[in-house]
Length: 83
Image (tube, rainbow, N blue to C red; front, side):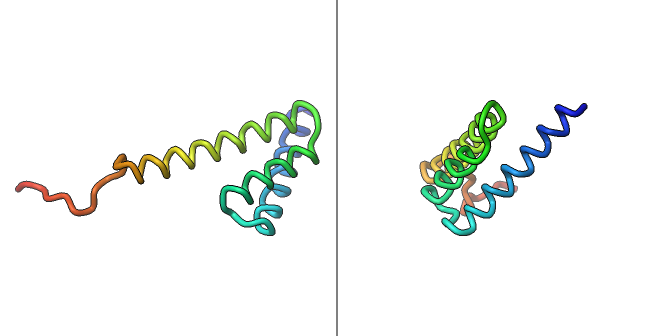
């Protein structure tokens, strides 16, 4: 139980560091990447590795969603329906 509490605390601290640094650096691609690097430099070991991996995954997921929308993967707003 103590390990889970420590993991939750490390996650909260990592989220706080990432959020604050992203506010200062901007929420664009480079600001987000720098926030992840900063978070990883504060949290060492497996917890830091896990957090930076999850944050990196979220960037990739967001980018793929944005690319899909630009390449026609999104829903069309001007489609005509049939009655």
